[in-house]
Length: 191
Ligand SMILES: Nc1ncnc2c1ncn2[C@@H]1O[C@H](COP(=O)(O)OP(=O)(O)OP(=O)(O)O)[C@@H](O)[C@H]1O
Ligand SMILES: [Mg+2]
Image 1 (cartoon, rainbow, N blue to C red):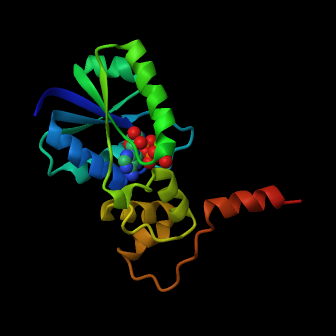
Image 2 (cartoon, rainbow, N blue to C red; image 1 turned 30 degrees about the vertical axis):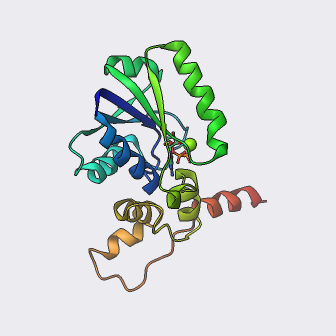
């Protein structure tokens, strides 16, 4: 076991089974793993940082050496402030490699003592991304198997608020939510 803290930075919007796979692998090799949510990485995230933190805390509750945090600004500065010795990143396919290599080399230039470690997920998660999950869920498709059940439930609540109400009251007729993309399309095509 490596002595020291590792940071696993990302947007986790939302956390997927791929992220969780990597967290579990990382927790086995580092003394402590800090999953760090990058604030403002996207202009309009689907989930707030607080919602993402809550989901990640629930999902990693069984891993005693995993902590959830958030950060803004330069990752290397945050890593320094946490006294981290390592950054954990995941590589799914060749397509991730170029960007990840660029980031790792830039971060090494900014902070030569900070090492980046790459891990591969189980092959069944090698195509899973948060973006893919958001797109499937927004189109009303099934995300089972791509995300943990807690996240699946949160996606359903986020995209169809009436679903949440159904659990509380018996509702016989629920007005269907018009999907966000459809609202935007209708706005655009308005004369
Ligand atoms: N399924 C996965 N397997 C392995 N690594 C992953 C997986 N999904 C994400 N990662 C890695 O986790 C880190 C943080 O990724 P990030 O939060 O951007 O997730 P993402 O799925 O790529 O999200 P988005 O689709 O919004 O870009 C990156 O190093 C990314 O390569
Ligand atoms: Mg990404």
